[in-house]
Amino acid sequence: MNSIIVTAILVLGILGVVLAIVLYLVAQKFKVVEDPRIDQVEAVLPGANCGGCGYPGCRGFAEAVVKSDDLSALFCPVGGNDTMAKAAEIMGKTAEAKDPMVAVVRCSGSPEHRNRIVEYDGASSCKLATALYSGDTGCQYGCLGLGDCVAVCNFDAIYIDPETLLPVVDEEKCTACGACVKACPKSIIELRKKGPKGKRIYVSCINQDKGGPARKACKVACIGCGKCAKVCPHDAITIENNLAYIDYNKCKLCRKCVAECPTGAILEINFPPRKKKVEGQTENVETK
Image (cartoon, rainbow, N blue to C red; front, side, top):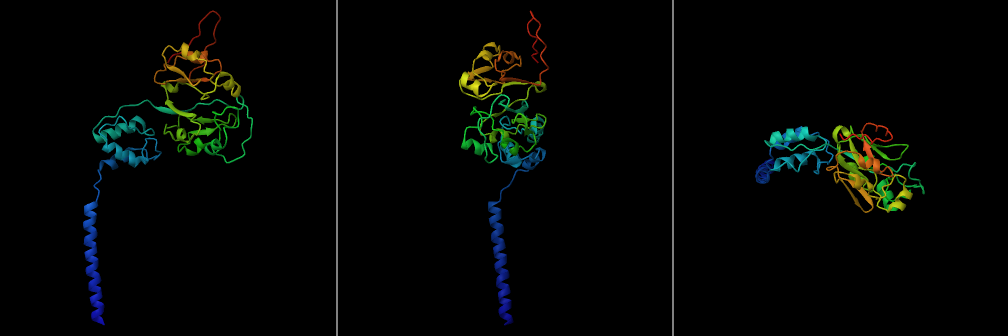
């Protein structure tokens, strides 16, 4: 009986050693040697794992940085230029500085300007509401204000104003990760250059209806009249599908379009108040 037990123990011991050797050989054959610089790059990243860089988390972005020969197509919106400079230094490369971006809400259709014609009594989700109907106002393009953008923001940089029922972006907190842009089923939110001292100009409307119906649906809708494009000295404004759009790469912030817009659809952000126009004098417009 004892010999049987001893034999069993020996057999199991030998089998265990053989399997351990096999597992070791398999592990050696299929092991992946990871570049240590991936850990170094990941360490300088903000760790937000927001996906704003286009990769699955900071680890995925760090791997892309290490594998890339050129960093010009890579950018961490949360960390910004400082973070990219540190990552580039680790790789012995240079990173091109990019203008800071910020999310803007291209809709000004508050209840004051856009009357509610129906009442939505369903789940508080813009995505779901959009799938069910065109909206609770006469503007099928306008913001629904149910807060999908707020729910996906990891930085507490956007909220719904209780009076306007529209999203408001806190530009100091916004990292331009793009999560709110992707979450909006109406494609109302856009990333734009933050601008010098936060100054920026954009058309706060995406209504593509013709002038009359657009204005009837919302008092501050763009009616595609083209007046803004005609006065722009920098060829920064185009009219397409009855809607004006300002190219932030061409815009020089002269504000001529703002004064020309008959509906007030063009917003000027972080500019000083305009000086009152004196009869017989041209308007004093700040350009920078």
